[in-house]
Length: 254
Image (tube, rainbow, N blue to C red; front, top):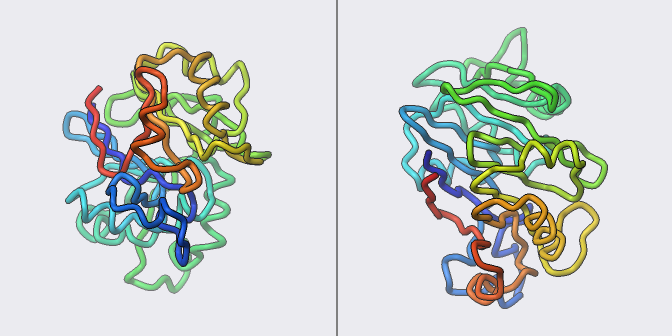
């Protein structure tokens, strides 16, 4: 399995529009972060987790020609605003399967009503295949059993995903012991770590490290990173062994 980090930034991305923060002015390409998403490939299958506002740019950068489906963690804009940009895939291959909680689909129906219209639908709009998922039932994609893992983003339930030995959790603030048990034994964990200061809805770096210590994966990559975290090179050098900051374009094999 190959995982490509399409984006590793928080909701505003880095650089932040109009910001003179030193990280926003960094010349290190690892400090340039699009909105958070990953591409997961195995055998002849290609899946994406989340399609935020940078989805088009991410697909072009990685020269993605086909996707077998998109898994959505939750309905926030930085995770779903690129929905319309699935059109090239739709025109070439037909309906694109989306896997999401029914609450997320309800939000998408409101926001992208022209995509989900049942009458007089504009012919240029894509059509998606809605596949409802929840934390209680595993599902299969490309021959792999996917385990949904529920976390809380402040009070909003968000789904993470375990695909064999890779687990992807984003927008975590808290996670129950029951859901942690689903993650135990994973080899590679990706989880959000926003900054050093505490945040209402996201893990800060000390909270993320405490959770890593509890889960004990072989390797961890932090994502959903704010410019307030600091420079990539400085922060990564301070992290424990086998814990890294992900960066846009990073590729790992599992």
